[in-house]
Amino acid sequence: MFENIRLPQGLEAQRLFHGRGHAWQGYEHVCIDWYNELALITLYRESDDDWIQQLSQWLTDNAGATAVVVQYRCRRGAPFQCRIGDMPDFMEIQENGLKYGLYLNRSQNTGLFLDMANGRRWVQAHSDGRRVLNLFAYTCAFSVAAVAGGASKVVNVDMSRAALSHGRENHRLNNHDLSKVVFEGVDIFRSFGRLKKHGPYELLISDPPSFQKGSVDIRKDYAKLLRRIPELVVPGGDLLLCLNAPELDEHFLQQQVAEFAPDCALVERIHAPEVFIEAQAGKGLKVFHYRYQPQAS
Image (cartoon, rainbow, N blue to C red; front, side, top):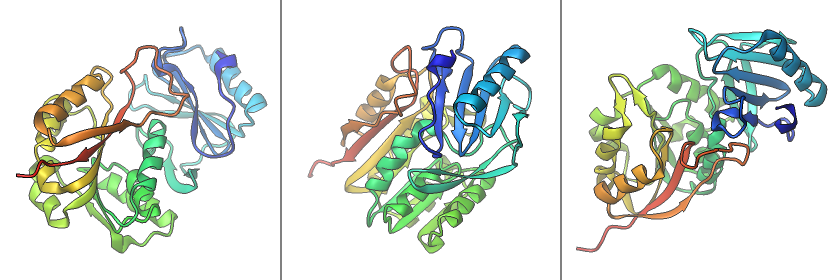
């Protein structure tokens, strides 16, 4: 496995090893991420402690890590354990020149999904002068990219007020003008009226979880969102539609758009960084750029 670990390119946040794509037999349970000079090993099943220590030392000796932390996603509460150096509770990290706050040992997720790096770059490059609706905003990383790209207004929507609070911190880290940013801690599917109040939008971003008990089941809920596009997006506006569910391939999303938003035309697919290798196509993150082009009546 060690020979398949990518050495970090600078200090920007990046993935070094992606076992979850099942491309590396025997290591499907291992991912390694790089934050400044801290290496985070994420384990999805229990592993031999001596092997974990060998891996930690390898990351120190070969990748230049000054700290190595292990997160046991296979254990209740997904706890973190420091193996080498010190584990800060909070880190300021960078991606594409932008700053994000990262928390270790606070919750299961650290605050930034690295497979979406190219999506954030795309948003930064396509936001100038535009009103942006960021659905399922989580910690507002797309919003940070949009404001950095010159967006005139960004509306972030997420049920988690704690995640939105983290999003405010991310904007403050970049010295952004918060008068351009709106944070709505509401259920998207019960709040379309409030979303319309801030619109219409030239760019809509939808990056939903695949399932959250009592709030989101993407198999049936993506259709509810797609039906609302004419109310939310201006003609000629762009959509960045994402799908994280490994059990649903790209054809699911494309079929949903064809049925429930037929005036949206596929422009391109935005791929994850190369390190996110998938043994079976369609299992990983799916991100598509559509354009809303309603037919003249």
